[in-house]
Image (cartoon, rainbow, N blue to C red; front, side, top):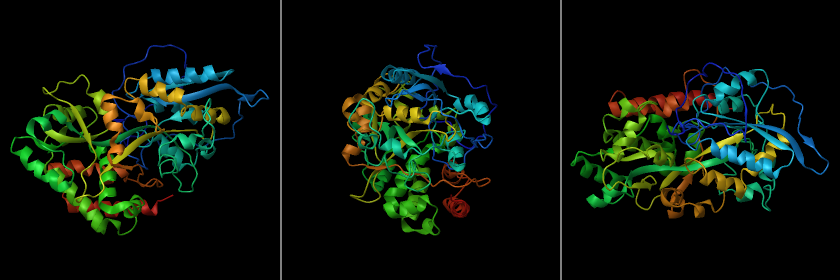
Length: 482
């Protein structure tokens, strides 16, 4: 599913750690069909993985230097397999080996990556580089953050991209080099590097809108007018794959309704923030949107049936759904109405001429504090921002895996061009997330802010019930801020 089968699940039975060399050529298993890191549905700071002991001992770096500042040795890279497939990682690792004589990369890539690497990590044997993002089901990245067991990567930002004459930070798009996700401790230091990004917004059938003569709403008032027109034709205004997909939606809506200053306060669970006018506006919009949501949505909003909700848009039974670019590949073989054509838009503005926001989900790559080959690992991470690596990621996968670097949109076409150009059309890019906290029993970002959406749609919970829960849970999360 979206990067995506998410949150709050304790890690499953551990498997023996295995590695496969990048150039092994072994057959790639079928893709799970999800986007960046099994959707990472939310930057939930309290998810699972508590069984993984990330306490590290001092390691001896077995990377050697030949005296000319040339790193050699074996680098262990572990990457979760997503909708992009395995081949892009095999190709990028091979390209790194080809440009770094004396270097061998052992790659482990699997949809159930945590199950594979956890047993070795319990024995203090770590991959050197890990691609596994915030919000994933096992909560691996959250656990390493909470345990302060990440290697600082601030110096990678200032490294020259291998084979090029530009520093990593200067290749990144605005916002990706400085945000609360890559700097989880709020100390100005980088611990997670931004990888593939995906603008998230509302997907719809452009062909249906053309057939009906409908305009895509620019404001929420226009959205409600459209809802009544669609209702008259037995078409729901809205659906969603799972409640977890409201992460990107909620961040965008809060930014629009609250403004940047109060939005940052909300992300830190500031006392009284949920009584602000901006928060009330957001809650009112979600309540009304729930009333216009296709009634079968909550029943199918799970990891097994989520595509039934996505299919509602292809069947013209619902107009809009929140999602990311991975949905296009995910539904590529699904049946659809004649004339169907993907459309994509930012959230409507709260008021006329107000900001329209589109959350940018991005994956993260990082190094455990116990990584043995840290210098070589940093060189590898810097290489991932090279034109060589970016071209492989964008063109050789099952779907385009786009790096947040300058001029990448110029290399895209078709649906990808449409989606990644959204910020060129005036949408505000939002990319921060709820603050990391120490674990709070029974409370996660998902259970507080996202899962209740199902109950709002079904009528099992009222808006006031939800707000009361948010306030209570925010008190607990605020007290547990790191």
